[in-house]
Image (cartoon, rainbow over all chains, first blue to last red; front, side, top):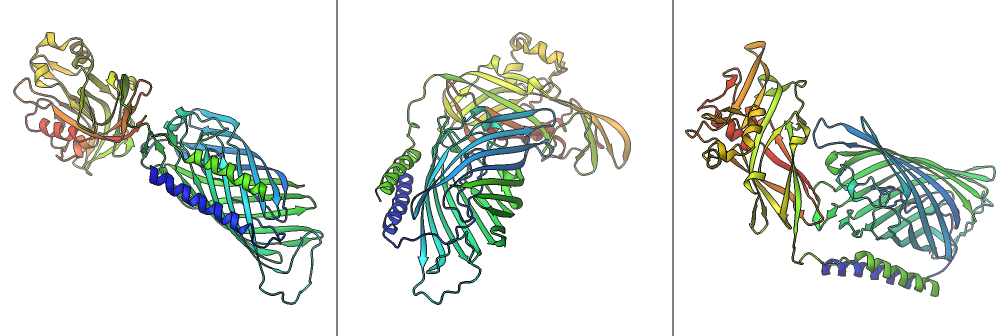
Length: 333
Length: 261
């Protein structure tokens, strides 16, 4: 237990140290901000209050609304012929990105959860405020060694392109998710314990992101580790690694930009721990293929992202994600 | 810079809170609680359906099950260090009847608070109890009679009633089968003890009532270690050759799927 605690602390301190040190590195404004947001974490946009979403195309600060829909199918029972239930996870989020210094920004997310589980003979519904989360981000934009010739072609007045940057950037995120959503112990006995408005726990989030963009195309990769805390019911959701990678290309539509993208995203979960016992078969993974687009219309950003499963194994196959849909609307401040 | 420092300190504080979990595992447990055992009957991984589903037995026969009942007795709970809690005899004998939902849930009260990792129980009625005579059976005698779980007092209890219809290659006409297994008076003891391990311990506390979900794979009765072909014999009652085989198969059909704490 102590060793475990030590390790967590050490990695945390290291990250913190890295952030503090890198604060002294070169400062400069971003080039093209990228489509980089961490997608939902299962148990989900539901339980971990999910969606440490942040950052969109070309906006350093915004307030937005995000809707996410995830559909799962889970077994209502333990047998091969047990009936299945369809689970609909609707999450409405108020999210914002606030710059603190040129290289530091904070993202905050406040979700409202509306969950339905449809059995053969009944419907189970759950809704309420989910878990609020905050992440502090530190961004390093890498500078070019020497400035080469400036090719000034098709400069979009909406985009600030600083040619002395290489287009490569790294992001570090440190955050916390608070137990503002209600956790109902009785629901843990179901096949999908992720059907919860909140985890009831305080969780830490560690993120690392890499982006590259050149003109209006690029890639964005983000990985996050969720260190989950134990809630007052002696229940702890499994720690989780999430990743998200995207390739996008922007096109000009008059003065507006449309940026379609394709990518993959996924999660790995460790076992749930209850009363210090690891619950068997509560670990797993899922990988989704994603496709979508982001539209920049003056101060508005509209994004759509559809995810379909490529591979998955959740709760020993008893829970399956069927699809995921995200829609967001951000207003640049 | 200052803002970042404050932010870092705040986050570190929060992260520490998140990582900190108090160790309260070594505190002495006191008091008593309740636990429940669910007997869930299945057939080769499928939830058992009476009267409607066709199941394969030994690959060559098709069966429909109409009745499934069995006697569970002498329940004991065991902790990691081998401490046994024996449920008082009178409160420790039940008839599980697939057709009666309530009968599949057994509630055990006044269990000392502990982490239990094994459950022991018997299928049937042991000789000690049987030899106490009719008076020693208490209310259970009436219960067993009402459920058709008695032959006669001389022959004793039926530990399992497994009835239905079957077809086989050489017997395409649907034919009734009945397997009634029990001890034969005091001449043949078919009572079997079963031990099942729990995947996570059942944590009985004054405020926690664990539910132990036991699955019985009924396909084992015919297709288990000892193969029994209905084609060969479809009526097994007081059969000194086949009923011990049924007893052995029955004792091996139980597993614990999960425990809810």
